[in-house]
Length: 142
Image (tube, rainbow, N blue to C red; front, top):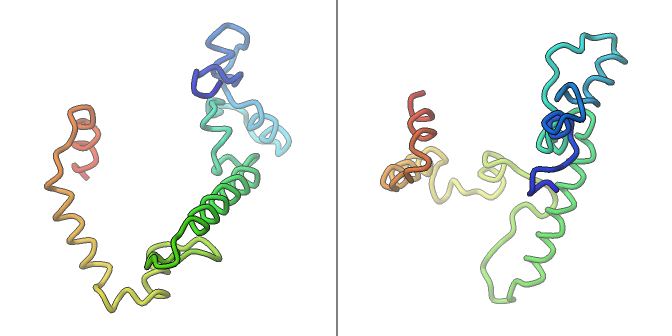
């Protein structure tokens, strides 16, 4: 349903004439319960409902994310050959690049800044696809 774009969200139901408003029904209920205005509700889409930024689903979405990550990690780890030098550095928890850099002592190799500079040097040599030119130009203006 999600791939076909026919998940019965308020946006879809409004589009086919079954609802009057595309506003998120759960956000409306939450705002009403808190005595807040229901004006300007975000559209209820598949992406909105499945977003960890969506307060009413954050715990569920985060749990699903962690479950998928554990399954992927376990599968990669199980398939790893004993002679492999590949090291999974986020076994116990997620880490951001700064944490990994400190914990794994990557500074012995180079600084994060040196890595970022080199990555940018390489990135600017990669041609932008015609379909992504508008976005690329917009991002690079800032």
